[in-house]
Amino acid sequence: MKLLHIAALAASLPVFSITGNFVKDFNHPYVGLVVFYDQNGAFLHRCSGALLTSKVFLTAGHCTDGATSARVYFQQDAGANYNPATQQDPVSGYPDTCATGTATVCTTASLLHNYGFNNFAGFPNTRDAGLVILDNPIFPAKYGKLANAASLDKLAKQRGNQDLTFTASGYGLSLVNPVHFVSFRERLMASSQLVNLGSALTDGFNLQSTGNPGNGKGGTCSGDSGGPVFYGPAQSNTIVAVTSFGLNSNCRGVDFSYRTDTSAVIAWILATVPPAEAALIQFAAID
Image (cartoon, rainbow, N blue to C red; front, side, top):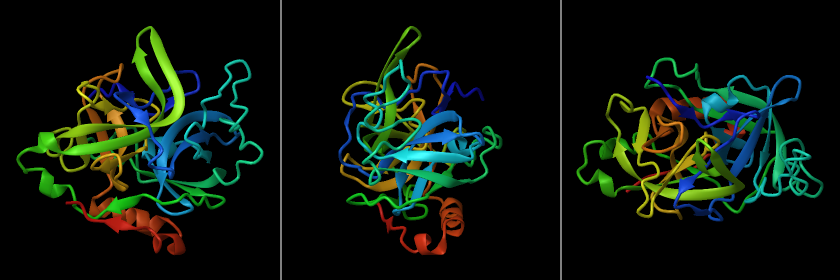
């Protein structure tokens, strides 16, 4: 299996995000832009993710893999003022600092966890889930909820899957082709539809959804890694998966996200985070 893009890229490469028919995402203030650093504090890559509590931030395992620290920005336009000359956003401080006056929407993290991601070994169970424990709490108006265990299983054999809507949220590029890319560095969201849950590429571990087909739909690309995939329309806050990978270097075609509604992933999350935080994580049923 050749995976032509995963959604976290190093500083030397363009970083991508929600594509297609996207809109600015003001519905999910707990979705953040996370920057990862190595042991020397050097920038590694950026991803997306979502707060489950004031300190527990859910992302992808291939984002936390190899990193030793992180910083998370929750501004909708966290990097929109990025200056290529200075390589920094003077308003938010992205990607190196939390700018003065942004303590309520930006913080560092020195504790990272990886569910066992190992460069997509064991595919299709890539174990592509990660956790970032914030050094200081962030208090948005609401938090993401995890879908109850096995919530998506009933959809695997249900007729009319093509009518089931999911919403992805993330930061970064919104247009990419071999010679051109556009990055807004803002939190954007787009809807997609279920393709399947039981193929050789999914097999109960991944969610396959439409990518960037037009007709009112959008998709994900590199930089959206770890961003939440919500069950339902834009107003939903029920997370069923995190953006994981795609098969096309230009981010066309179908998208794949790693399911977070499995009993094993939920058990890992609850066992990994501090007990006081585990007690605060909310769950939701899907229709």
